[in-house]
Length: 338
Image (cartoon, rainbow, N blue to C red; front, side, top):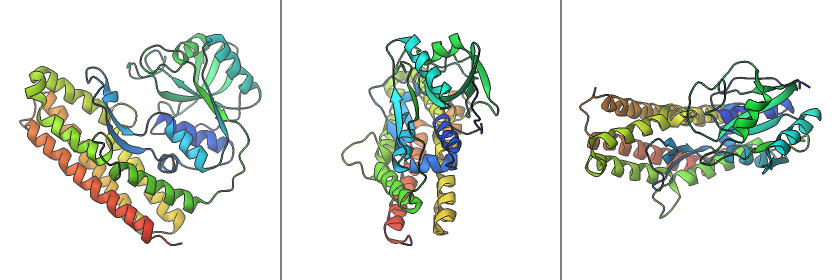
């Protein structure tokens, strides 16, 4: 039982799995395009979550699963999601779908995934099961490897039903009906850009989301040492750096991916102005990367930059993103060809 599934490496698990799964059904959309139409770009600062050992306090993308669901809805592709209270039922249901020639996306925990290069308790990693040979499953995990992998029944069972925060409970998802590939990409792209702009600059009276969330984080950075002391203040920075550079694609990486989406959109819609926005989004990604670098240097006692100076860097990023999304929203609303 092995599907004819083309495995292509990707920068991020959810967008990579979604792009590869669509490619299986003849819908050839790149990972950046999936990220863009799936409205993946965001910023969320979650004050109620502890920063100690939990990089989920900071999110640079929409919540896990939202990109897949949003992209499929835009493309009018019927999909199904399912969780299980019984582990064996979850494995049997997946075997049934595989026997019908259907690739199955899975949400799993990273900590016990045998081939994972990092060991963190993160229960929102995506992979696609594309076959079974005896007691082993064939896995397409585009964010970790360039080729298909094999994992034992017991190992897959363990990561599908991992414990801890946001435990997946065997969550799996698949394309329910073979898609009829008829959609208006201009409308989809323009609407997706408008919605992303709204998330970043239009969430009123909520200080944890979008550009306002970045400003809120800047204020927190200024008070770190006074509030937590030197040791925990540095730990806070380390957790933030992990969120920006190490977990998933990271804050800077998502900005680069959105820039690639805008570049593709420019060519697909014959809107060369979008390439200028692509360049500017890449520059903003560089600002995030430089901020993470300075935080890392401070954590390792290799920088004399103060917490106020780090906070000022964040304000510069917030201002750049605000101007970017205001201008992009105006262009899509009035400047795009109809």
